[in-house]
Image 1 (spheres, rainbow, N blue to C red):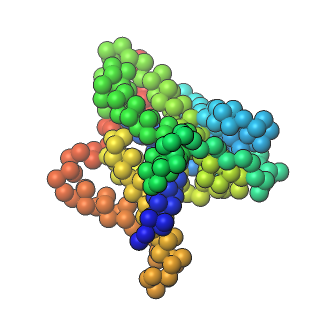
Image 2 (image 1 turned 180 degrees about the horizontal axis):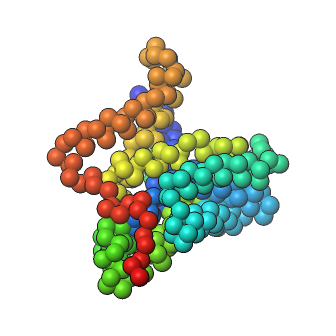
Image 3 (image 1 turned 90 degrees about the vertical axis):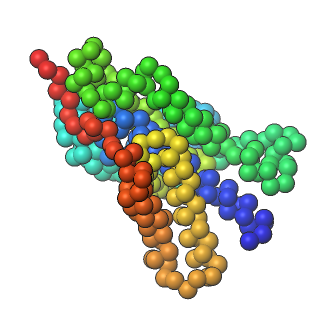
Length: 309
């Protein structure tokens, strides 16, 4: 495979992985606090449509990203109110949030379908962006690609090295114990849920502002569910989630390339299964190997917290 093919393919892999990484990192923080939010798909759609409309109306990508993050956080706030305040079932509420997001985004974006907007500008460093191979791979991306990588580092540091990260993990592992020593479990979980919603909103915004700068109904196309799987695939650790997002993006682009090139005479339906099949195989290998003990989910994940009276 020549560099003329390899470099564009690598850039496409990065583009495919970035929205998954945003959503998966946000959900990772949510789940480490003990909350299971299955509404990632709906929050990504909310971010995608609101971010697109904001850019189309103002011409400002910065405002569009802010609007997308707020839209995702708003959906997450609804989820938090139902599950943390009213103590509704987290699984049912998350599924309802996804269905609500699909319908709401279609309604809000019905007049904007297919209208193009300027794509999120890419970084342009004179003397570096023009370098062969290295230039486009390292210095030719938009701000969200670099932000996703910076957030991976930041979240890993936050969870492992800060007191606030320790408190968040304590709320996910032993909520009653955290409450007994004076930590406000509900408040911590609200913060985590809002952060996760904002991250999902940014993941959706990447799709409508950078990957495909237009609004298409249901354009997230199941990526929210993939992000949920990536959290478990990464065993609730940011670096493994980063690896999983790029692996899944790579397999997705590879199957598209193989279908288009006709190298393998395999039905397209089978090729479309490859990303999901690869995820299942890797999960099976890790779960059955020496890393099995590291795959334990947070002990309080999905459990409703009821402070003792």
